[in-house]
Image 1 (cartoon, one colour):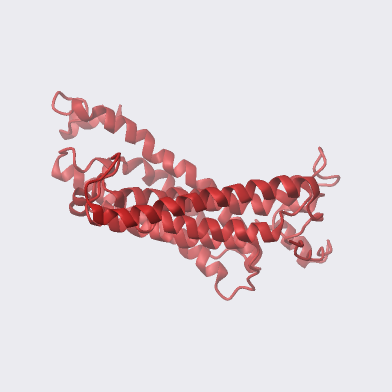
Image 2: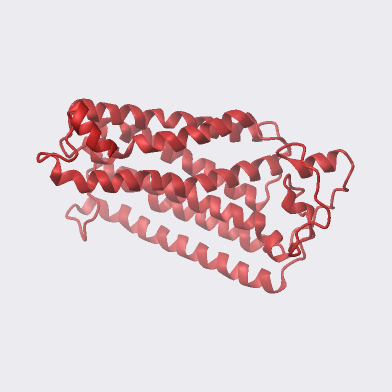
Amino acid sequence: MILVEFDRQLGTQFFTTQGRPVLYQHLFWFFGHPEVYIMILPGFGMISEIIPVFARKPIFGYMSMVAALFGIVFLSMTVWAHHMFTVGMNTYVEGFFMLMTMLIAVPTGIKFFNWIATAWWGSIEFTLPMKFAFGFLATFLIGGITGVYLASVPVDTQLHQSYYVVAHLHYVLFGGSVFTIFAGIYYWFPKITGRLLNRTLGEWNFWTLFVGFNGTFLIMHTLGLEGMPRRIATYANPAWATTNLIITASSFLIAFSVLLFFINVIRSWRGGEIAGDDPWRGNTLEWATTSPPPPYNFAKVPPVRSFMPLRDLRESGEIAAEPKPEPAPA
């Protein structure tokens, strides 16, 4: 209805005869681009929980982080047509979507600086969840920077449907979602099962995933800049063969990493090291009960005085800090 009103009042061409060939693209991306943020916002939440725990500091700029979250939610509805800069839209419409796409980088950047400032001068413990969180920061930063480039109409017109776009997409989605999912699983697996995931297998899981991911997608940027199109079965330029061979080999390293993860989950679930109730000295209430928790969760409802209630109880001496577990043997 909003698009129809734009046609009637502002002279756009979403539903008119001239615009009808690309109407499906508008409707698809009007759904599809906000859906990308639906995938990544839970990961943002997990990272905002994990980094303060292992930096032993409160999250930096809590209110600005929350405001940035809502900024992303609302701005995500205004950027869909940056996927369509080559379909012949009005120059002013393209300019609007270019501006909004660049603008959405602002709240995302605010959240990024919140996480960096939280870790800055913190007493950081490089546990497996923290390593995956830092892996997310490194890869998502690259995806965000290339996204700013692609927001520019002249740049996107040249790189559209090239491997540069494939690289950007995976740095945002894989780096922004998969690394956060692994961080969340390694962090909350002890709460779900009462056991820690094996650290040695976890280290192999992280490094093979990090190296394999960057080996697969980082050099795709060069292929895109050299003009290799996406969605092709083969290619005529022999100069691209070596790069594509590295990409293929690295993609198998990603698959090997995921296999290691499943082996780790199965082994640890059956006979992993006992985690204890609060192995990470967490900030939130799920760690205030046993691992795994009983059906009723709490025999007595803990007091909540801030967004870090368990940390508050620990610092006030109302509960004792649980000793930190030793790393599991290989």
